[in-house]
Length: 463
Ligand code: OOG
Ligand code: NI
Image (tube, rainbow, N blue to C red; front, side, top):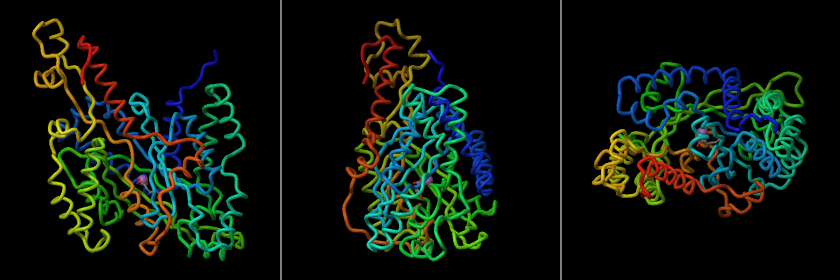
């Protein structure tokens, strides 16, 4: 039996290598990491209830290394091969996000680990978008884009060999795993050399800035890497002291005592120097990479998600126009007004079935195992202090938020309208498989914790 490095370990190494590379490429990212670490330390020191909750779920250990990145690929083949590359690291496509209603001609999924134990080793995720070239209504330009994409190979030959080997043999040994991390990294690296002339770049850019970003370069450079903070409002407020100017509006739900889903904010990081094929030196420029921070909260059930979507839509409808710098204050007021309908109390969220939870047998519960009159229902055990619960952290993304992040980094001039509905089937076909349903994953994780809890307490069944 050969000894393989576990996919979780490969992912943890890759995530570290990616962060080191991005620090070199985008210095502001390093400044952001420092700020996030300072704020997280302060929260852990001054808000013991948050520190305690993270200790229960084990998130204390994963917090400092938690990152998500994003890439945009151009063809079905690139997407299908990226899926195979991520699979080597134990990452699977979860969820489908259609960004076209928001004027961004892509649809997306998130590659991530799916089991709570794997997430604990490394929660690294990559939001991965596929350009929808069929939406370009300019045939010669579409053809140019197709030709350029057909010509490029975004994976190194060695990376492709190692993916094959992993699929054939069921894993990678130590040396191959290390080699794989280095080779895989090449796909995500920034290249100063464009693959087009400056005139072609301009044409692609004029059609949509995103199209130029996907088509005019050698590969799908990682466009941001996002650390997780425990207090996004504090980081947002402190960003200017580090020379960082965030976008005006934090995407997602308003601030709460018990965070839900995901709050995000981003900033423009870099204007890169680019050499077009008709230039000897880097005379052009391209804005590709940005910075982002996120705060994660409870994963919501379908019922909780429906309530979130309704309250978010009501808040946005009440605002004349898109949330932006000019109406940021008004938008935040709308959010907090509408979201007062969403209970900010874990017991209520649980009793009303709004969020997913993880359950733990407590010391008291274990000590009471032999007592004949102890409670045996979940509610009874919770009331008696025999079972403790914490929300499952949301591991995914939000389509409206993602659209806001895309738009703020593509420039507000990039609002376009595309016809044609959601095409999840086409996405599955390009990907070469179906995406996993994130709600099922949360439900399974919750069920496993109830099962373990019952076992520890010597009960047949809980739930
Ligand atoms: C992805 C934008 C979405 C998020 O965190 O929702 C995103 C991109 O710009 O490629 O990163
Ligand atoms: Ni992001």
